[in-house]
Image (tube, rainbow, N blue to C red; front, top):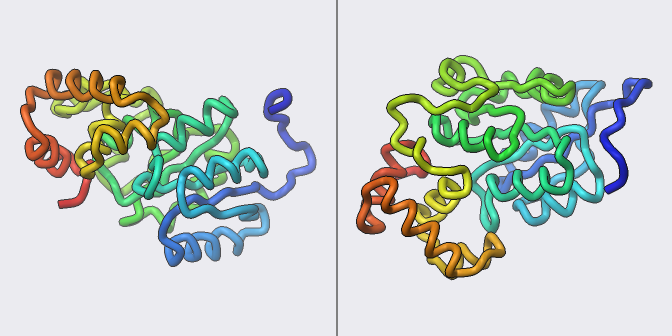
Length: 224
């Protein structure tokens, strides 16, 4: 891409890209955002791969992104968009409210986080805040009190020992993806996935997949 992000002086509407695999949900917050005269939804996508393509095509001011989607998923989508545009502003809108998910999303490059359980009412404010370069963490739920711009881990978070990439693989493994599937999804070699797998198991003191799944459920990384 050419040059850096240029701030508009004529106050054009905030251009938003919506990325969510649930059409009903996506339609709901598109309708909400488009009631605001200063916000315009320029594109939508149902998965991370398409979202990345749409980002390069439209270069929106804000991406509203789900984390749990088919394909590369939300965390890898954040990484790819930020690799293409380090100044990208990405607001997560997710069912996941765990400290671990928020922290790793911010570490991957997200600049805001709302939960679907109670975040719709804050969506407009969040989009505006993220568009101006601020970090926005939704209030009134478990993610607001402990999470800040430094994305520091809570002391009792067992997943804090994982790097951002390891956490990404941990989540994919807990969701039932095989090493070959993870390698294909993330465009890395099966050998690299295997090395990460070994490191993850060692760091967490785990020995099998069922233990990974139980820990992921306990930490609200996946749904039971």
